[in-house]
Image (cartoon, rainbow, N blue to C red; front, top):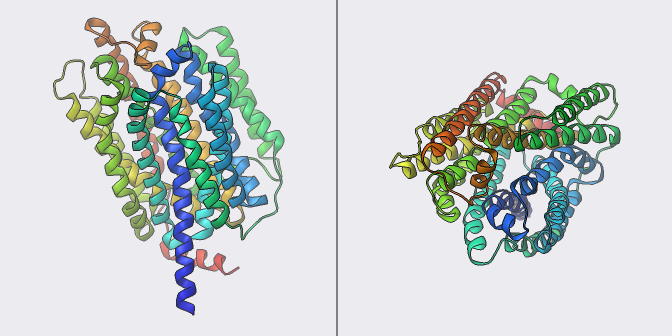
Length: 489
């Protein structure tokens, strides 16, 4: 009887992990599939680059603002309920995105979709921490990373195929049946066994939202032209609001972002490493796609296929590296992962406007990137959750997602701004949406912008690597003892 019960428990654990991976995969598909649909969305809605870029950025902005609070809501009302509701909101808002007839309606729908995505992102890691013993969490996070890389790969392939043969609206329609199926599956298998007393920090959320909105909007506006006085004021007021937010959080009993957690060296370094890794690397793929389309004249589908080997490598290695981090700790695995990402950027720096072997250079760099991602994400996520307080898994996982989303959002601003500095902005925007190719001196000028963006990204990744390396070596046995002790409470 004991063996049967244990087998049933393990079976349910695998189903729960599959549901979390499915949610991660949906979010990943949407992250890459939208990039490749840029040209058709712009033309289909008679819009422009600066409006449609918000289809990406509004998602990141909403996730950044709400993820930590949604994690706290999961701690209070049940992580499984909030995660599962995220599936339903994601599916409904995807249907709204597909029916959009204006860019404004599409951006608003994407914002709603981001709320569903934030519900899943904030609580998925917490559910894993609740479900799996500490000695098996790295492997579980490895499968979550696998879900991200598989989803990103599918997004690249499906983005090219669907936008070419069916139209951009179907990149959103595809989420509807998957989301409904996942909601039904989650309703059956995701059960809340733990809830914790806490309060929502509405003042903190409003201040943080205002700060991020002002800084982001001012930064995005500055992409269109030279930084204006209005943009500077918006960014300045955004940082003032951010300073007020930090002041408030340090004096609030139940803060939105518990900055006191930063006293834990491993947790602090892991969270900051996640931020700088996202800031330094997450928009590089976007930049390389623009290189392939704008300078080398490839179609969106051909350009995306070249990146697939890297995602395949990352998908294959992620569970293995996650399991390895369970045995040896997170510091070494995550830091080596950052080193591989730096190697990928160094390989990308070989590219120019005429090199004949550019396809093989990009494939080599994407494979190095895939290895780095497979090592960094499971190990770093494991380190964060291993050092989170038992009653704060949701808010801590939400804090991790907030830091990552913040990095991704500013990564796009940084990369686009730097890469576009050497040529007329209107020309750069045509390249970014894949509607024009460059030749001659303009092509070489754009390459200089790409080089500058890659060097800045490399410097930021070095910071992430240093933070990862100095996080402190974990005491694996002590971590396991603490986890087993907590599970018996």
